[in-house]
Image (cartoon, rainbow over all chains, first blue to last red):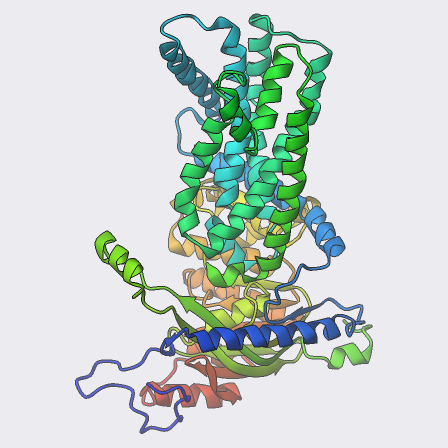
Length: 334
Length: 262
């Protein structure tokens, strides 16, 4: 097969002698050499230069879209943010319909929203009772319940958020919305899954005499922190998953590591100081330790709070930077 | 359209300049043992790439219908995706003036959701708001003629029903530029006629249409210009009759008489 288009003449050989078709319309593959990589890099650089020149060229009030080689730069943030905001309904609807889709063929349907968290609570309660040697760990029950149910949001961020881009290749190839809507939608989906758990947590804390007081209001700061850290990690991981499919395999372990190293199903003061001094740096450690603190009627630990704020700011900045820089290449990689 | 300044009128709806698109390809892995061995010895196969679109340039004036023909894998769908902005070019530039709607069968539709939800999601993805979608919804439902099936999950639809819905959605999103990827043939005879009438209407309204199809009769009846794409490059471009003749000659089908669509 040659690279040059065939002449439109009757002699152009279409079939081999034995009658087998000799060509598809597709060109042959070529090796992706180091030289080619270098060449691409140079092209990208040139494109970036031209792009900067082109941005100010457009003054038509007509709707004009210009698509150029994927320049690795962060797009102007203000228009991007505006675009995100005007399309927020899409993220909301995508999350809602995904949840619905998952339950669409089940007998119990929407009831799963309640059954899922209750099952999890029972399972871990059983596990914890076994570990405690049959003693009834009653004072710890609200903590387990709150921990496990809150962790749904983090789990959604890591799993659904991490795969949010790679799982939507169809949508991405056919429409041009700002891609950040996908991880955002995954987080919102986690929030929707968490909503029915709120009454369960409230009931448990009321029935089981957890402390409710001024410190309870810290939840209003802790929960947003958890969501923001989740978003940052989702942005980071979803970009990596697009470029390295290996990351998808790693993700199952990452979410388990995060689960077991955060005080979700164990009291934050259980491990030795040496262990704490390491695991306290995990992304969700601070948030979950402080959920436990406010359930016990204490005020949150401010050092852990600071670490959580650091994670929130750091992961969102790094995650958005990486995501925005590469988002225009996503469609070619999927 | 009439009160637009003449300078805007003169600009083409779509301008493609020296567009090239490459895909990286990876061969699927072998067994665990052989892959580990390759990884350790550093003898991993080099990544490969394919130039799906090669240095393609053309313009489509406002209101024209361009047909793109070519064999499987020639780069037609890739080209359309670049026009819709979903795929970034590797080289070159695409300038599109006007809102674009891409119609490729079934892609981007979620089988576990109902037709109704897919309409909503598709509309929101292209940036319409809820109010506008509510207005459009009835029109789409009327056009698709799917009756109560609109409320059933799409994986209960036949291929033809899916294509009806996809077509109905794409043409009702009020696009100034409509990109159609091999999506006219899905419906039954009744719907085909229904779709043909709608297409004629859109053409009359001065929408720009780009049509990727293997149906040479629809190229003849609809297109005002045509491109034949071969191995990612333009093999020939020009008047539809000329392109049809050249393409059929290349495919050794010159003796076949195309049926007249009407």
